[in-house]
Amino acid sequence: MSYKTSPLTEPVYDYLLKTSLREPDVLRALRAETERHPHGGMRICPEQGQLMRLLIELTGAKAALEIGVFTGYSTLSVALALPHDGRLIACERNAEWPTVGQPFWRDAGVEGIIDLRIGKAAETLEALIVEGKSGAFDFAFIDGDKKNYGVYYEQCLTLVRPGGLILIDNVLWDGRLIDATDTELATSTIRTLNEKIHHDERVSISMLPVGDGLTIIRKRD
Ligand code: CA
Image 1: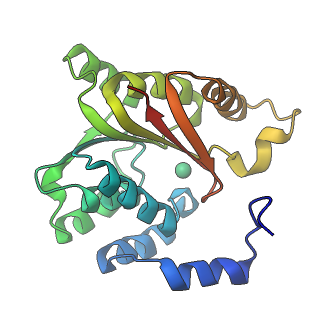
Image 2: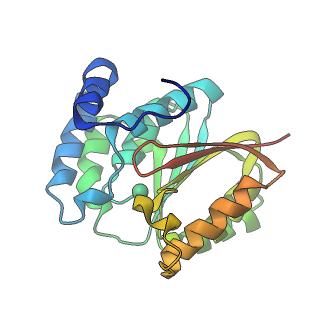
């Protein structure tokens, strides 16, 4: 029964949520709001948000990066787990999307630790490197535009301290990676990055079938 990861049927998934999900009311409310959004399918699933909060607790992370805010559900998940003197630099190109989440960030009392940067994430991250912030972050979540995933990975690897974590979302890309005829730029970028990380001696990794696939990466000392 345990020689491989069990396929998650709907009833088993419901059970998993029913018996393990801890989602603060403010997050639940933002999730409901996001589900009404035309691109609502882009948000992370609640158990993934919970895993991210646990990882932040485990590592004692204080300084975090997020690439791809969307409506700010993952942003709020991370911010709720950070200490009061923590800081989350949240990168988003679309100025409209985060306005959905901002009232919820305020309600949760974490608006002050979220530093929203509207613009191209690669430019925001590059500016942080130029400012001398290499190694200054404990945690990074990459969930932005897929065609730049390779760039974001290298930038985050520079910005995160040894022992810090990088999480990459959508690494299973709805199963499209195993279709060799799918050569769309987003697909091929994720495929290439997964293969690179598999053999990247700078990091320790675990790829989990959570949501659309999540790779947890620890920058080695
Ligand atoms: Ca995603």
